[in-house]
Length: 83
Image (cartoon, rainbow, N blue to C red):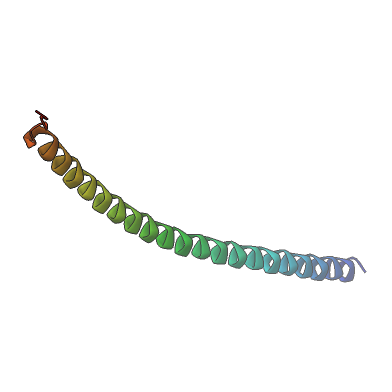
C-alpha cells in the first residue's frame, strides 16, 4: 500500500516539476525575445544618433564658415564717409 502512495506522490511531483520547467522555459523565451527587441532598438537608436551627430557636424562647419565670412567682411570693409 505504501509503495502505491509513493508512486502516486512521485507521479504528482514529476507532473508539477514538468509544469514548473515549462513555465521557466516560457519565461526564458519571453525574456530572450525582449532582450533581442531591446538590442534591435538600441542599434536603431545608435544609428539615429550617428546620423544626428553628422548633421550637427555639418551645421558646425557651416556656422564656422559663416562666422569667418562675417568677420572678414566686417574687418575688411571701410566705413563710409560723407562729405
